[in-house]
Image (cartoon, rainbow, N blue to C red; front, side):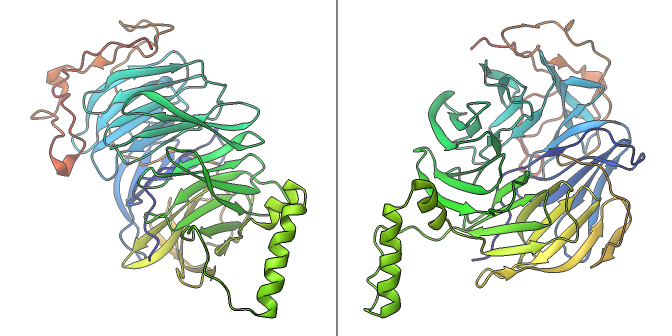
Length: 454
């Protein structure tokens, strides 16, 4: 089967860089990989990913500078924006109408935002806030989470379960699995010995993949049981920083990129209770003896021998840069897409049957005016990024952090400021039309929810 776009998001944010006003500050694919967003010091852009040969710019905005988080809900008009000038404030926009729906402020800097068609999550360093995306009501505040300085978390895009995963420890790779619909903890998964670096759900929310800060082993667990299903080894020679981890839509493949020059694609073979009996050959006999011997080896050695290697790989022409990858089907063929902090989008063909080395077929400049061919040349290196789906929206009215009514130091978010009716474009901002999903009932600034205490 063809590896289609994974139903999850990986965001990448970077600190300010002296690379100039066009330097990337954030970039990411949206949930179903139908669009790519980049952010710069002067604004942000949104691209369509429907063609290999042409990268269509859907929208560009220079009205909101210094944006370090931009999240778009699939291909809808709903966009969440966080700016460096107000790192504690989240603004929700209808970018096609150029109107702000609402905004919320929090007790600390916002590190990441995740959303599906049912829930919107805001992750701070030591707390997570769960909103109902239909009216932006704050449903739950998860307080006193272990320190999470990178805002690492994952949300299943399957809104029928809305599972949330976040680190359960700062020193070990423990994952807390939380039910975002019923607002309760499901289980805790001891995924790795060291701290987590990446976590992601598959499209249905039935599998959870993770990697530690070492980046050598990637594990896949069942959801909600938390049982280990697969274990893949990325490498043994060196530790790496995993930049992104993403499933294909059909959950048959898992892609991982890092700060090295290699992108790995792993194949998730179908699990069976029993394997068919092999014919009595000498090689089959030796194979059985070899596998039986692993039971008598130290656990670390045995685990290493039973780990699967990459099914397919990509050799980038650079290393040391931040990358985000995804698997998608474009023009009816499986592709691997790699967006990099060098300001380019690389598109590779993938052989879903035989794997092997993926072939680069196109390179697009994200800061230029289209494709640059198969060799981007020696362009100036751009800064590290991280975020996704950029779009236009008017700057929100000036507000002061802790002076906004409804602030609760221990309860969580501030009461979102209501946008006056006269500030909307002609007609209400009703997003219950499937073409403008999500079905937000928050029309004409009617939002009045208060922060809840857990």
